[in-house]
Length: 221
Ligand code: DHB
Ligand code: MG
Image 1 (cartoon, rainbow, N blue to C red):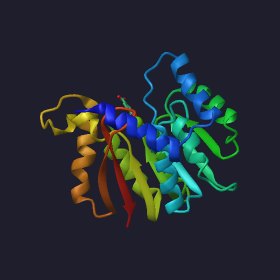
Image 2: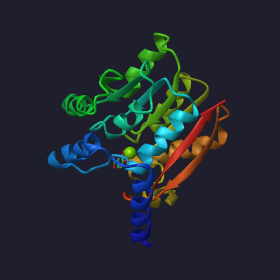
Image 3: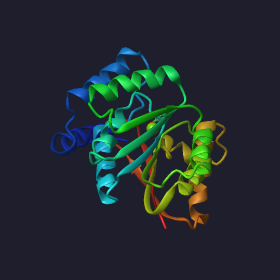
Image 4: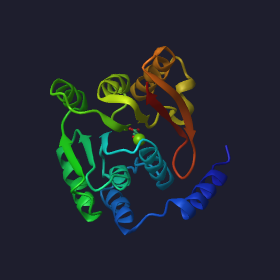
């Protein structure tokens, strides 16, 4: 595949609709300084999340997988001043790094980070009658993606938009005999969509500055 054209066009699009400000650039710098692979979404994908937030007039957003809060910042900026974003991260050290980036981007009044296992936190939310979210972005560990998706539906209202990152995995989902747990996790979700009557859903292939992958786009019925 000619990745160069995808990269150049991603930059072309970003220059027109998805410019990063200093805070987002500093968030990317914090990732490279931590010497970890940058698995954050791209600027154009960040803008796409904002478009979806606008489409459902999002006031309440839920994110699974905060990482360095790069996507969190894009999403928080789509909220009105009385909006709320809850982002779940399994790792305490990671949450602290994310919190710094959120403060630097001056969206801390909109964002609540929760540290822990997403499955447990989602179940607690359901048991305590957490009001529904308008937009849910699933980008945490891949093996339980189907469980996350089913719990996300329970935290939704008709019209809630659910987006799941990394469901194509550079094409690895084509391998029906895949043994990689991440690939198997997203395959389970992708295969579930055909039987799921709770949502209208599709999968978008994502190409661009980062790897070849895909995102589930679902609207709750
Ligand atoms: C991985 C996770 C991500 O959320 C992503 O966008 C890319 C890769 C991973 O765990 O491999
Ligand atoms: Mg991801």
